[in-house]
Amino acid sequence: MNLKLKISAALVILIAGSAAWLHHSPPELFHVGSNYTAKIVCTNVFMLNRDPDEVLRVDVQAPGNPFLKIMKVAVDREHGIVRAGLFGFIGNGLAVYRSGTGCAAVPDGNIAQALKYQFHPEPIPAPAADADWPQGSKMSLNEKVDKVIQQDALTGPAMRGVAVISHGKLIAQRYAPGFNQDTPLLGWSMTKTVNAALVGLQVGAGKLALDQDHFWDTNDGREKIKLADLLAMTPGIEFNENYGDVSDVTRMLFLEPDMASFTHNKPLQHPPGTFWNYSTGTSVLLSRIWMNTVEKDALSFPRTHLFAPLGMSSAFIEADESGVITGGSYMYATVQDWARFGQFLLQDGVWNGQQILPAGYVDMMHTVVPASKGKYGRGQLWLEGPEARNTAEDANADTPFNLPKDIYWMQGHDMQIIAIIPSQQLVVVRMGLTPDELYYQPQALVAEIIKALQQ
Image 1: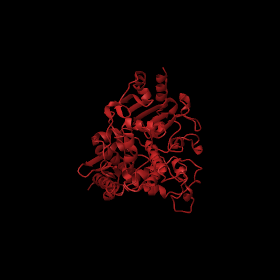
Image 2: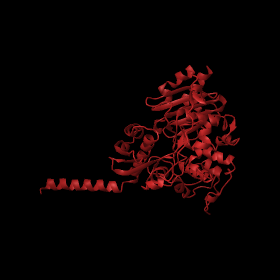
Image 3: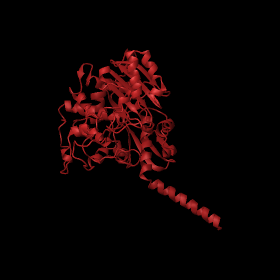
Image 4: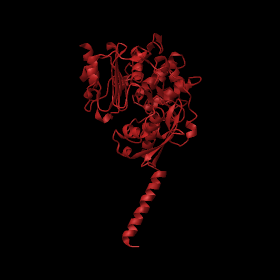
């Protein structure tokens, strides 16, 4: 064999060996990306009845991460399983669909474990098309506000849906091609605020208390963490929320079958109540805490005790492989149903004259956490909107837009936003797929809506 043939043969062996190694022992980052892909495609296919190739192209690959561009998926519709990987075989991504609890990434491959956690939900009556919002879905169009939300520069790149609620009425809405008022959209971290409301239901029922502190059986300081510390993101637990690599948050979401236990086992870094650290793991812990207080049917609790009373017929929150609701990330709802929840907060937890959350609980939720330097409230709400590229560390990102001082926000990854302004009786929802690095600021949209309403 001549030298050229020997080199070619060696290269073939090297490439084949590398491919085999990558298939059986992929780097953790590839495993994270593959499970992320499988999870997103699974939910959109089995819960939202979307085309898997479209979801892969529009939802997974569109934001621009280079290695997601070479992801391939295989959908087993008979068994509700999605597999994903780089080139289709590197990364071992796996997700499975369950009735009622949606899709879960299955990082350890234990599909049977994930399938234990499901239920058959009773349908929530959809809002009537001929009835005014919020009982129905009929809009009372404000043409001046409608002109504002038709401006692409204000609604931002890759907007998917916008709704404006003024004095309890839907006055304007807009949707991108391929989406409409019946399309459930992922709220990402806006789920945290809904999860805080689920905690509030159990506080109101006397099953939890804000000063409660027996969630850890330890003697290392974690036993001093109170429910109020968890809600305020000040438990002092180590948690890295950086999404750029294999961090605590990406490991928890895509490499850990039991997300709550992963966070529960993290060490204490700061005395409870003294240091603010935004953490999706903290929200998942809150899910397990309130679920432990529900005597039966904890998986259906959000639907029966919150979504049904508010008429949020499209809403669902998914559970992880271990059956704990992923209260930091995975709630889907239509734009109008997200708006119903925003209006519910605006009305201090009252709906149709019924005090659903304890009196004063919503006020607590948007009371400032001093350790957050004015940015965050005590119940998983933001006190200012997204920052610009050049926003100073101690500056309020809302100040340049002259927004009312009482505004507070629900915020999620890729610029999912609900702005709530009690003094204006105004709720603005904006959903999309807008990467954070674009530094889109919805404050400009909200400011122009307020001006239009004052004309």
